[in-house]
Length: 177
Image 1 (cartoon, rainbow, N blue to C red):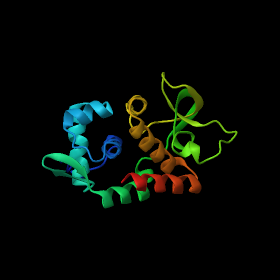
Image 2: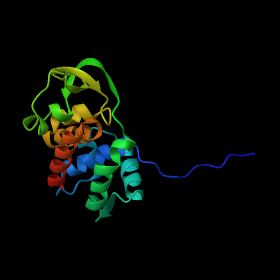
Image 3: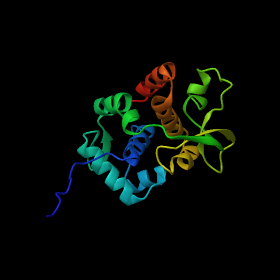
Image 4: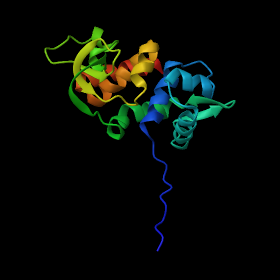
């Protein structure tokens, strides 16, 4: 007997990653190739991710360009994304600072004696506890684009931080919408 196929759409980490990339370029009308180059992902990944985000009603296409549905994005980002994409941690590595150790939160939170969270990356200049990035190309793209870096670091604070860090990250992300 043949098993039924599950056709339930499921969001993937690259879907949220591209939504955060769109937020970093808020107000700009991006084409698929521009978004792919900005985020460091393939065109097919952009197409699939935006299709799934549209099915989840997190974005809509206006004049054939992706546009965030702000209330839905905020609700998912602030209340669901950290459960859908939990923080995966590792040991001490060299990499790129993230979460509370990166801007803009680093200016608001005093550093502790604990090693900071970092995305493992060869071009990083910090040493700390590994935090698996939301998407493999995120650290490289973040180093090229400060607004994307801040969005990804704020999301990491939402998914791994303590209550104070999460509240500050939510407030700062709210201002970006």
